[in-house]
Length: 324
Image 1 (cartoon, helix red, strand yellow):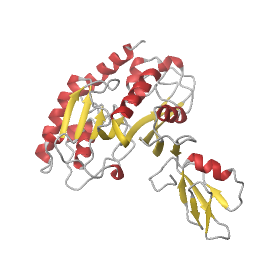
Image 2 (cartoon, rainbow, N blue to C red):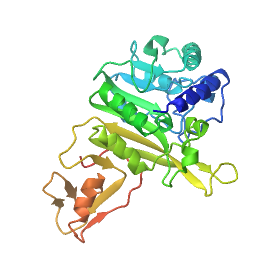
Image 3 (cartoon, helix red, strand yellow):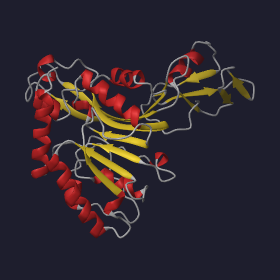
């Protein structure tokens, strides 16, 4: 298998560690402003991601957290805010220079934040395709704008590795670019563009399929936002390519017999002449009260052809409270 592209990726992020590049990525999510949290300026400059993997409803009961691809350490610091314990957060990266700069940034964060200790975070050299982490040991595993770099076979391995290290019902939180148009082969094979998290962008449904194929029984699409344009003027393409960033949570739930529950922001509303509607499958719609439903349940309800049940389109923003 040709893995030369991974060496190019290491070179790109080695340079990004030694010479921080504010414009390397374009984060679509505002940085969390948390009480008592100060993010050092260099750490902020090195926020090399396309979204956020910090979601407050995941971060309860002092979770053990794995973060792959440490960048400047900002999300490691944010995660440690919710897991203030020795080695509560493990950061894994393959690039020595990035690990060193991250360590320096965390030392500065310790000077600026009285509550924070560098002992909260364990930095480990390792490969996303063979994580140096025990099976079933993490409550949360996260990556931001890393998996988009991998070609399909390597992406499959990376997702399987995250599944392996998560505890039952643990959460894989991802932020990656996606593209619904067909990415030209010449751009896919451009090693630098792939390293910059652009030309490896998959359609969202393909991305979700790779996650569910690894065994994740529940998937939440938490955000979907405009990200970048690859245009004929600046890139070797004959059409304008629109890239979005998505934030996804995949939960290590058992796989339902009828397939995974994927939440894309659909809602069902019953507005008939009864107090509620029960579909007999565990879903109760109270009168005129919206219920977030997974795509599978939405399709089943739509198949009933009832004029008193309304199903919304996907909003691509889901924040819990759903049917499953």
